[in-house]
Length: 330
Figure 1 (cartoon, rainbow, N blue to C red):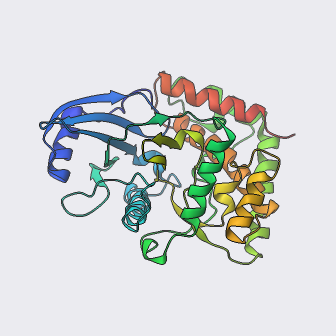
Figure 2 (cartoon, rainbow, N blue to C red):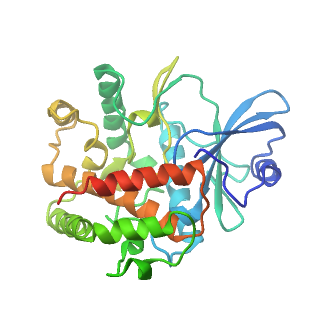
């Protein structure tokens, strides 16, 4: 995220790092990187660097009526699975550092989840296209390793239930003035945008539900999945390629990691089939592509239904939302 979260002070964060990890912080600097979690660069009193991630549990909830505790539990399970995967020998997994109590995550008040990571030196990338075909193939190799992980790393993993997070926030009325109570500078714009495109959005939701129903009639092929193996979640280090941001780990069909990995010519899908013996299914590839767009739309709508201010982050969310809505199939 581009700006620190409201309601979180760095002094309080430093105390959490001390209590949770025994970390004596000498300096802490906010990093305007990524879009979803908040990050800090921390140096301890011995000069060692660490990477801190804070997630807003309000945004991690699946529904408006879900508790922050449930969102925390889901995040805790994902990060614990990343820790187990790393401990099983997957050195490409940048997993959280355990707390003094052995957990992967600390809850800070009701609203925030805090995780501590080693500071990784290497070449980082942004969301978008892979830098080279070799980059793309390297990520496929990592994904194959994740999908074939030993059962010892699955004890904390939760299963994908195919839900679209914040879908309840997409409920509409015919009158844009009745959709949302005014909560900030983007509320009315969001309401109007959704009402004007309600038919296209409804068709996409119906299509997604149909894909889910069809997928449930197919055989179960659940594997451990990263969830977001795009270039922005990769780094090239002196020891090779690594994957970061494991907060979306789930047991799911392999297509959850494959739908965005293929360049469009089927080469990566064929390579995956050669490596694993599992042939990716078009139905599930479409399902996860549709859900990605729906989840991004619903997350931005949820943000603008809640109190918010005009900030670089909200401007970016509006850009994402309006772009996705405009691209909805008619």
